[in-house]
Image (cartoon, rainbow, N blue to C red; front, side, top):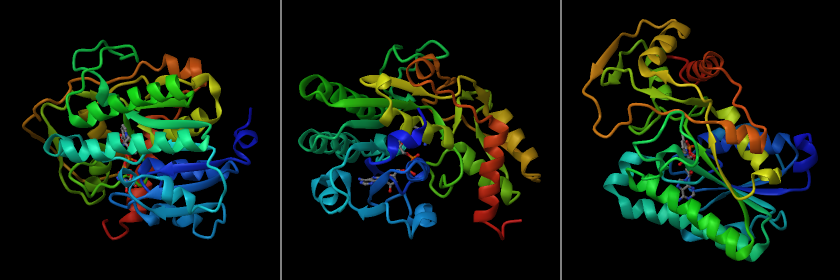
Length: 328
Ligand SMILES: NC(=O)c1ccc[n+]([C@@H]2O[C@H](COP(=O)([O-])OP(=O)(O)OC[C@H]3O[C@@H](n4cnc5c(N)ncnc54)[C@H](O)[C@@H]3O)[C@@H](O)[C@H]2O)c1
């Protein structure tokens, strides 16, 4: 069924909607005809990510923290009953969570609990949650399917897994419909390269644009499954309106793995950069491989991440260049 048929007449709350993945999700929802309420505390997100919609009457942006509850912010939205919630707001750094486990619990598990309590009392039709490949143990088969062992190595992963359990519980006890998407390494325009916790592609793209050296931890032969943000936004929106994914945990990746060395070479070539590549000591605890088994996404959502790495990188590098016009 075309997306527009499903989204018209819906009111979708997107927590973290001013962030990287959130703003692409908002783009997709508004284009599909939904009314959208963004709740964001702007801790890492930015109003700039939604500037293209500043005169759009079907968008409301509310500054609020999900760990303080979402009843009051959503009551002020004027759009009538919220039909769906896409819950993306989170403290997103694994490293930060190791140093600050209580803060991670408060925002990442507490935020999910607040969203589910709101949904239970307000008849929200479906909650779609951003989980992560960080829930898996470091001893899994590759490609990794959703039924592989989970034993998170960080409070961030623990709270993503606990959030999935909370969704399952609300589904069983209150009949709440839900889907949890386990994202692998998401990249694309609007990913902030400025934080020490940023994704490798945004950092490499930013440095390549300025001809600065790229630093790879370890030998660079570790692999990752890089999935383009436009594909991830499509999976999120589709999960809202497709009941085949109800009650399911679903990997969102490409099913292909690439090494960090290959990635660095590709970014330098595509951006026509004079950057050199160096190697720093490996980071303790870093996984050697990461790649999604994507069969469930295909079977339950009909979803295939179809943006190739070169195309996705080209979009990302173009955005990096336009965001930093004085760099070259
Ligand atoms: N980027 C990835 O590779 C990746 C991988 C796996 C999972 N995820 C998950 O996807 C979601 C979105 O991540 P992203 O990469 O877009 O990061 P992001 O930092 O760009 O987005 C997070 C958004 O949430 C907001 N936020 C943070 N804490 C909040 C709070 N307490 N209340 C309200 N808003 C708050 C931030 O301001 C930001 O706009 C997160 O849940 C993240 O854990 C991302």
